[in-house]
Amino acid sequence: GIAVIAKGKSGKLFKTFTDHMGSFILYLPAGNYEIYVDCNGLTFKISDNHQSVVVDINQPQLVNFEYENQRRKIDVKKF
Image (tube, rainbow, N blue to C red; front, side, top):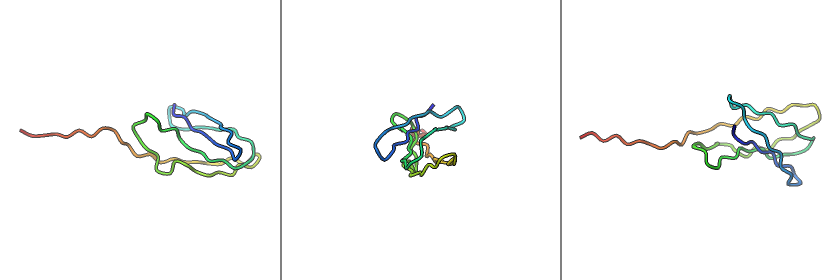
């Protein structure tokens, strides 16, 4: 899976990984977090990678990341 990281105001990091469908779950204490995807070494980029989230007790939050494929381009030349 792909690493998804939540960074709290104190700098503490919480990490999880996506499943085969790209979904993930993070269990976090109440507080403010910056959530992002670790894209190092991946062939795509996330358009809004650093999202701020406020977590309240027993209040699930939904975070969606949109990605842009950046695989190698292939140039076809006709002879």
